[in-house]
Structures are given as structure tokens and as C-alpha cells.
Amino acid sequence: MQAKIVIADKVFRTKEKVIIHLKKAGKGIVILSRRNAKEPMKYDKHHYKARHLIENFFAN
Image: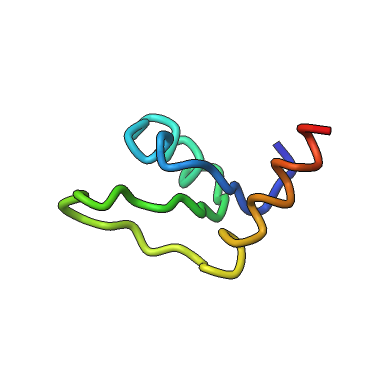
């Protein structure tokens, strides 16, 4: 994987194996935590706002 930052939907926040693998690979992780999360993950709001642009690119 050549990406420096991985932007994902909230559903991936529950996939701890995915997060651990990305951290070991040195990737930046931008995943919004669920509202009821006991330990909310910090994320870059600027990168997260761009997520919909990426989704729209692949949807068309």
C-alpha cells in the first residue's frame, strides 16, 4: 500500500486488526469514532471532510 494516510468510515473503527496493521505499516489513520466510543480516536478533520470527494470519485 503506497498511501500515507488511510481515510475510512466509522465501521472500520471497530476493526481493531485493521487499525493495528495500518499503525505497524506507519500509515496515518483518519477514522471518525462512533458517538458512544469509550475512547474516541483523534483524527484530522480536514482530511475527514475530503472523504466524500473520494467516495464520489469512485461512485461515478
